[in-house]
Length: 137
Ligand SMILES: C[S@@+](CC[C@H](N)C(=O)[O-])C[C@H]1O[C@@H](n2cnc3c(N)ncnc32)[C@H](O)[C@@H]1O
Image (tube, rainbow, N blue to C red; front, side, top):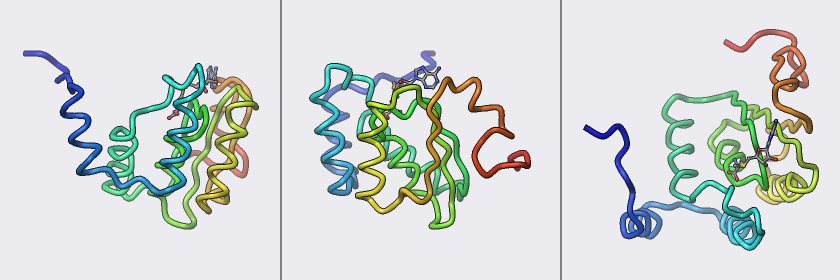
């Protein structure tokens, strides 16, 4: 038995057409990022929707993302958190995350997100995360 089921294009299109709940900001960000030469690094829209589902299903209040890029997945996570939730983001690129910061602000979730620029190995020293002196629970 195969461990992974393949999603073919027709199924991906069906999911996107019938299940996707993209806000205008997310759709714009996705389209803008897709035009970049590195745009293939962005997660697919249906993967973003799955992140939202999972975060809501477990009632996530805090999250960590390694590799933010232009912000699509972080936007999905942040929108799934409660207003006082927190998402710590790590990336090494000021340039790509500038786009992310703009999208977070446009979507009104920037106050839930703390971005640290630098290699994640250093950032993920939990005590080094901004505003954090205790371990996650
Ligand atoms: C595949 S992309 C992430 C895609 C993103 N989650 C999205 O949904 O659009 C990988 C990201 O990891 C970042 N990255 C690479 N090495 C890193 C490191 N050592 N620490 C933190 N981020 C890193 C890159 O700059 C890039 O933005």
